[in-house]
Amino acid sequence: MSEYIEIHWTAGSIDEARKVCRYLVQERLVACAQIIPWIESIFMWDNRLDTVQESKVVLKSVLPKFDRIKDVIVKNCSYDLPEIIYTKIDGGSADFLKWIEEGTPESFASEIIES
Image (cartoon, rainbow, N blue to C red; front, side, top):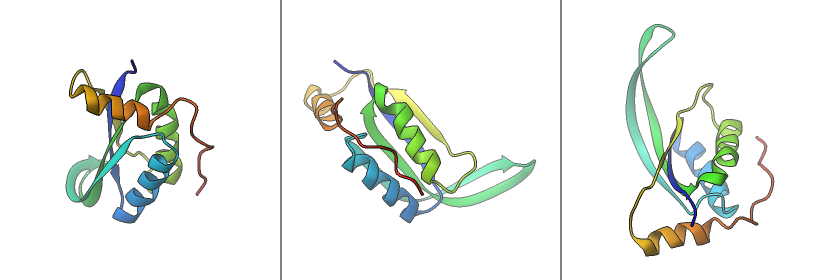
């Protein structure tokens, strides 16, 4: 049984989120990509208060694929320092977890896309 993870990423635009998510799903690096089209983030950057509109992305995958997923996001996103975090899924529907595993087979995935 794999270690299942949920990855959170904030994309600079809906188009950026769609491009990366479609690639990750097609390459079977993630079983599912959920895009929340619009969120507003407030944070400190370069010692200034900043507010931006972003798209929130939630990805379902397995831990061994995290580094490849992170590489794809970093190479194809507009941010210098993108939020890319994961949490382990400690439980849930056995059928859904099996679906994640089947959707992210070990032997699948081509090379990372280039911008």
